[in-house]
Image 1 (cartoon, rainbow, N blue to C red):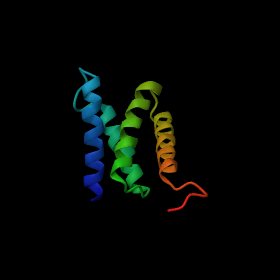
Image 2: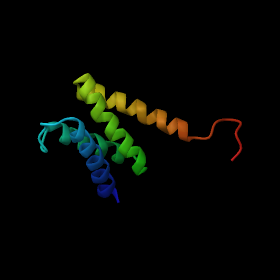
Image 3: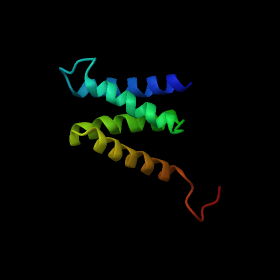
Image 4: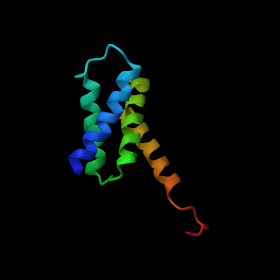
Length: 95
């Protein structure tokens, strides 16, 4: 499941990215950076495929905005953390 989750999340994000950015090569460096980012999340224990997809899309968006891999990773990590927080039960709520 590990490589399938990484491959699937990256493929989803990359296909969507290419829809909005014509003229970018299939082998663009951003694709390899994306794979590295998602593989790092998976290696850190993130198993939720939906969250990996969200993080992958956020990473590419932030990479375009910030033009810096490290800053894009930090920004995408924050988006991922926000998603995780919104999914967790709030104090005082019953399950």
